[in-house]
Amino acid sequence: MAIRIDEVLQLDSFQGSRVIAGASGLHHSISNLHTLEITDILTDIAPETLVFSTLYPVLNNEAQVTNIIQRLYDMGVKALALKLNRQGERVPDTILQQADELALPILLLPSGGNFSLQNNEILKYQLESNLKELHERDRIHNLLLDIMLKRQEYDILRDTLAEVTGYRIALLDARFSPLPDTAPEGESSPSPNGLSEWDRKNLSHSTGDPFRFFQVEDHYLCIYIVRNHWETIGYISLESDKELSLSAFERMAVEQFATVFVIIYHRQNALNEMEKRYHDEFLFDLIGGKIPSESDAAARAKRLNWRLAFPAVMIGVSLPGADRRRFLEGVKARQEGLRIRYGASHDVLLMATYEDNVLVLVSNPHTSHLEELIAFLEAVLRDNHFQQYYIGVSLTFDEMNEAAKACGEAKLSLRVARDLQTQSAVFYEKLGIYRLIHSTENRAEIYRYCMDTLGSLFAYDHDHETDLYATLKVLLEEDGNLKAAAQKMYIHYNTMRNRVQKIESLLGRKLARLSSYQDVYIAVRIHEMFSPNGYGY
Image (cartoon, rainbow, N blue to C red; front, side, top):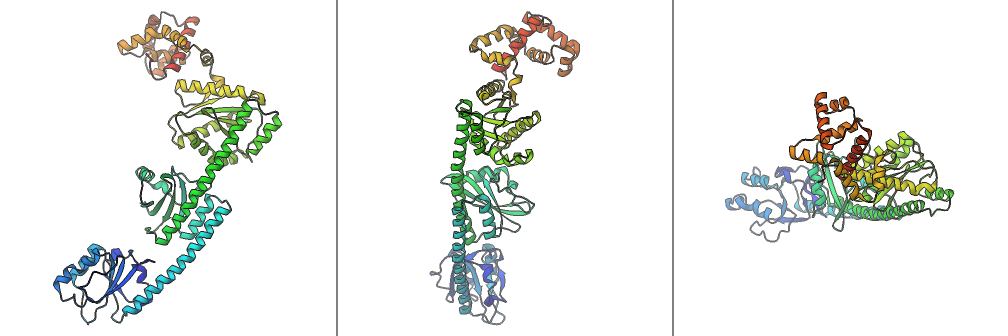
């Protein structure tokens, strides 16, 4: 077993020894010992060796003094223990200088030191360390076996590794978020969030050695990359107030714990998949009218740790091209906080996938609670870095057989949100004219109506590089009030009046007439749905 050079200096037979050069290499480890008396023979020294010598033939040989340290270093020698035989004898400056440059420690032993005694004490220490490591390996094996047999989770794995290594531990998922039930608490908790975005990206795409070391402000981190085959599935973070240099035993311990990390990961994935299937089946049966009674539905919901009660509301979430499971996991990880917030003994939200969307069922949704829950869902989406998402909200429904209608309302609201390219929640009760637009299957005819009404305005803006269409939209938003529209656009009232006259001239309609106003209003709403970011032609 390897032993660090600074540990060698703590042994009884090395008391009184001094480090006279190469102190920056004291953290190096040695696995072999070699006593060197004839310096001309340097061919049988193994790597990672501590060499004992008097260097007696060298001290008066300038040629050997010049290259002896470099030759030992090239052979993999990690330290040199010297005992000077004669009073007043000193180690040449050339040797000391080379040792400092190569970080090869030179230990000056006491004049009464005994090489055999010192060799034997190191060997004894290594033997005792080997026995201790075997005992610790056996203890770790039993601890990990106990975790697996009792089907314990990440929090027990974290606490056990902290007890074994003495470091502060954090277990993180592939996105550097604390795993469920392991979020650190208190100031002494590991803080891998101090890593830069560049460091995180490098870790997530790195190959090779899974142990990576960092200094973050006033503390030190070792991040172990947990891989399942070639996929990075998480990280084990070890933190210390002192510079980290893991021993071979500590590395072995982390690797063994990482193996159990992977086992728990697969087990939880299987459980999550089973739970997701139960949620999906319940929602599918509820919407499809396949549950015979409300009491049966309530019983099934209870088994899913959710309480079905009316009135209820359905929220649809669309994540185009994104991983819906990541969103479901993000919500699940925060359900405990919702339970505490609302004093509930069950999950507040029932999540399931339906067709291409995620549907969320909420019981007894008071208006303020519904707004809070939508804000909660939006926060989960943002925190998990979803770039594109849409949210649609149904009307409240009072009976189980209205679930299909509520599902349709949520889906229609999602369609409108997608057409408008808005990430604000769209409520079915506020759809207004959009309900009629979407109920017409001939969308080409709808768009033709829009262009017949507004086409001359679009053409004028295009040819003259104006934006009268934007003026028209603001005017409609202010219900035709010229003064309010002018204030909103930060222009003079007369300027607004002139623009409106030009718009009316181009459209061939007087906006003061109700029928003309309605035609233009509907055309603008259609255009927003077809081309929310441009003119669409």
